[in-house]
Length: 378
Ligand SMILES: *Cc1c(COP(=O)(O)O)cnc(C)c1O
Image (cartoon, rainbow, N blue to C red; front, side, top):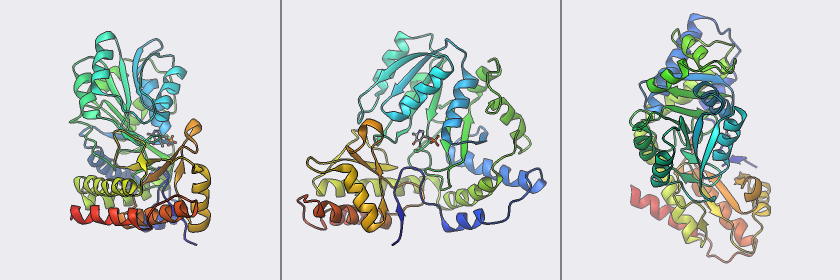
């Protein structure tokens, strides 16, 4: 049976990228290695939509979040944390580890933090040094209005730090236009690579803060990466095999064009939402993003057992809810190297498993709605 991966990280990797990963390992301090990292950096700037350089770290996405907080704050600094789920809570964990004074602006799972909530928090805390948010809250499927957050934060001296780990490359994200000071992403979501690399862009405003902040970390000290990248190099041994493979996946994104890529993800997400509604199911997110669809498990259906059955019988791997959301939601990723026909298959498999579990629906209702939505988008 064919294994089909629909988890919101890791995600499927294109065949030509997998072939690159199979090549012999090479030395990393060569002119060729520098040329490759230089090219990857340029392509990342395009994907981030930034003029600032993008730093490549050998770590999962959280390493980028850790680096951002360690380098841009000191203990006791006031941090406004906008949190709508588990990944906002990850920011909180990082902030606590580095001794920040956290002001929580929190909404229940499934809801989105609004710009108005941030506005109120900024007015109440004019001494805030950093504001932290999540582009795509992968635990609930919510997408945030980062453009509006950026407008508000840019009027203050605070920096805007965005976890764009599952959003960047799947939904619109304009780092410079939206005034994101530190934007973090990881390789294993929409960038079509296995886990192992984090990418971080830093604005001029943020570098001023970072350069004036005492050193608090070593391996992920962004200043070291900035100095090295000026010569297309890295301060430590990079995961050079992954960097070479990332070049291949980034070329795919460049060939498609970032705006076409955002539009394609929007079409898949719209069709997926239409399918869910036609199946009598509900979306979990009130402000859904385009990288994944999160579905509320209907009453009388065992959410976790359904996912296990779908994997065992048909090879489709969706993600369960995390922690206290386990069994309550299904998370279906359509970011990266996943196309509309892959998602159509996922809807078809979900229909079959639900019907087998006693859920009442007309076979093909979701599939038909998906097709109808795609046909309208042509
Ligand atoms: C996957 C994900 C993370 C976690 O990143 P790691 O690569 O596991 O460290 C953080 N934030 C968001 C929004 C994610 O989707």
